[in-house]
Image 1 (cartoon, rainbow over the protein chains, first blue to last red):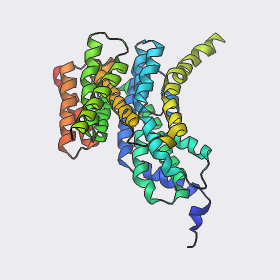
Image 2 (image 1 turned 135 degrees about the vertical axis):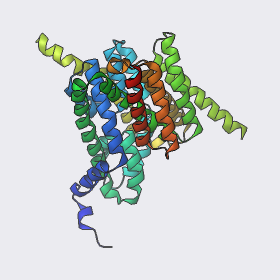
Image 3 (image 1 turned 180 degrees about the vertical axis):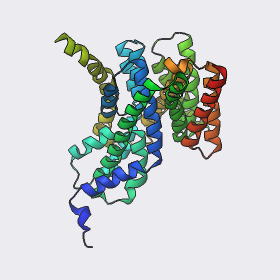
Image 4 (image 1 turned 30 degrees about the horizontal axis):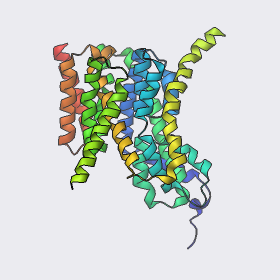
Length: 243
Length: 114
């Protein structure tokens, strides 16, 4: 077999293929909408636009960023915020665990995996798992980084758009911008919930969250996650045991 | 010095209670990836916890809204989210359709009832 010249050395080609694939995927619109909403949220809670941009690059997880802004903005205790952010981020662990075997190869060093590890997010993960398997191993890391950089640039840019729109729009329209984040989370999380355990956890979380807040239970997000998730997991185990 | 610190403080907070508690799971994934597979019980449970917590965040943003969204009545917000979710289920689980219908419903309800 003759080596394909561009797959041999240069990572630039697969990287830009990844960027292009990110900018033309369905997640482009979802991310744009979500981050316009996040920009509005940052404006609402009094964070600078650049703070949001830095948090997009460093945290790179929309739910964690929303928890961070809304809890810091409403003056929650720092340890409480850190716990809620960390619980919302648990999902990243199984994603990284599932993604890395696709990226490993004879020519891939562990440090080449640092960037894809940081870049792991729902959007990048879904697209990588869909596109990587049909691709030669030596192109995968660069392609995967390209997808993530494309998404991250989109998110950062639309965060600024939302921030400046929220400052200038009349209240009703500014309200619809803020509604983008819960609406896009609601539908995209439901779309990722294919099995009973995920759907149950999702439905329980929607109900338990507000009930705990109304009853002034501290660490409400933590208990929503641990409570709703564990009940869903219990039902899942019971159902399996009965089969 | 104090002015510079005041300006850096929000970024320091971001790293301490945002970046680090979030990033740790990615790093753990990189370090421990070899021993676990996607179907292990720990992974299944942690995915359920993460899903429930995201649902909690969504409910919190809709029910206990802040700022401009709080000006729109609660019933309109919940009604709009329900319409959007219904449209999402009806049209091939399309995120785009769901968000669009939810937004239009919120705008119409907000216009009529605010």
